[in-house]
Image 1 (cartoon, helix red, strand yellow):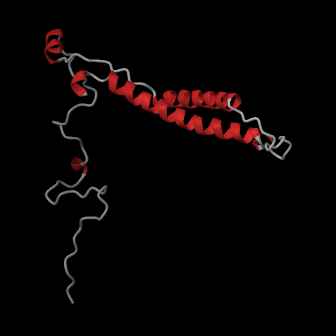
Image 2: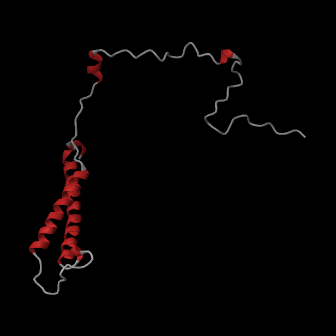
Image 3: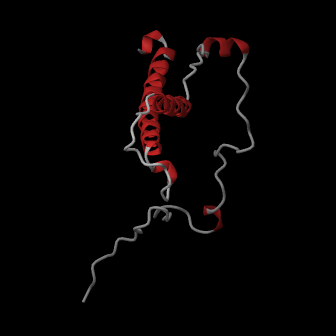
Length: 143
């Protein structure tokens, strides 16, 4: 029973299949004479050609977002700690801070929450300032 002719092209695209009309033997493996030489470097352009094709470059100084966010968060933490120390309540209902994690008892818990909350807000403010500085650093035609 005759089988159908099989397609000889492989499924893998990296496999090179020689064409049917390609010469067989060692001459098929020799490089072509008209192939460019790999050792030849392109010619160096002249001053006039460089001046004709050159475009003026501009340097844009973009801010580092991580630095803005970090300093915003640290500044917010300092402000939160100062607020917690300045606005502490004078009450007897606050624990004395002798628990397992003493800085999370009583006023320590209030200070910790204030530092974290205002630190997060400060990070967002720092990020917003970075976006503002980035927009300001762009050229007027790109705004």
